[in-house]
Image 1 (cartoon, rainbow, N blue to C red):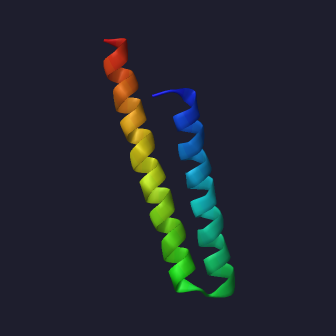
Image 2: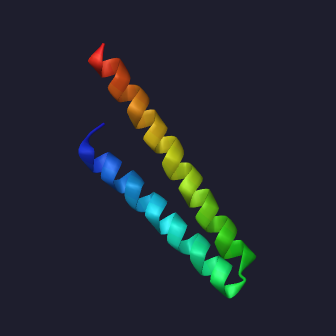
Length: 58
């Protein structure tokens, strides 16, 4: 995968952090959980990208 995918994954992670913080400040548990979920999804995608990159180098 290319740099564009990595940028999109990082953007999703940052959006998740923002949602989580918004939920914490407003007391909205569903928004906080949604933000946490978005971060987890982005982190999994980033881990997949790193694994693909590692196999490409071998």
